[in-house]
Length: 182
Image (cartoon, rainbow, N blue to C red):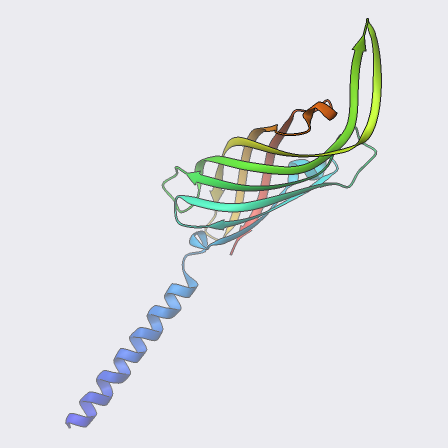
């Protein structure tokens, strides 16, 4: 009788432990750690911007955004941008709601300079300019129970090293993104 009770107690304990592990790994869809997003605003303009974000906890995350201009016929001076970022969320739900973002950007822009010499405008075309920028942004994120994310954000960063080689001294970040949290 004593052996049967020990076996039953052991099986019950193992079953409870397995059930808790399954619940921890499944979790709520909106509390998953990883997100991938596509900026549909830029896609409509002839640019491709994708983002990977890793939620560290319910109030903060880190991520990286990559932008590439695939439609060279439009009047866009940017060639590519890579932007790692850190976000702090202020919403009540897990990693969603209003956020503030700090970011760094490494990117390439056209080396065009428009100069004014005694009332005459001159366009100088130099080689593409690589530069690094630091900036801040803000926005808001909404997450559905199925894990679909919607995000709106804006940000501004200032070039640190080579802004004198081009007419561009800042990086504007804007996004209207849709994604998936997994």
